[in-house]
Image (cartoon, rainbow over all chains, first blue to last red):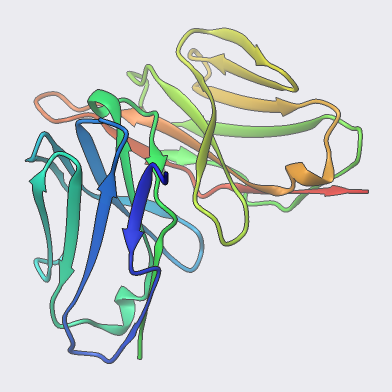
Length: 112
Length: 114
């Protein structure tokens, strides 16, 4: 069983569209994250939830809206996609917001 | 100054040699330090963490921490071609009244030559 799974793995879409990425973890962790990795491989935190509560909300455009229906799931919705949103988005989880993160396989978003 | 700095490389070492990867951080209050490995096209995976000054060994990997110098390193002994990857240094970033967050460096690309 995959510990942290994300869907879809690839998204190709036009500017202005809206898209969602889903993430699920079966590790029993209480903290989940979204990270963005750009073309230069820099991995930057976007959001974090602990037991469904938003605990980290970085300086991210409000076109990005995370949602955690329960502590095993964390979704990311992006409105009005822009070219600069093209990146790989990683979901991760950890026990108790430690630095020991388990990453999903990533979702590569390409905005045309 | 960036919060976590690494030389982007590539660092090229011959098979069997020791690879030394270095990282500096700017927050003197940081207490927890991590090394992640990321193969091309894959997700990062945790390989080492260190919380105390000194060395911590795990198989062929040794993490070294010097809090006074705000420096953390990863040594890979007997480097193998399968060690070729990007190594990401990460530091728990603490701010008063705010939630801790894990900040990554830009990574060092290691290439082990057969």
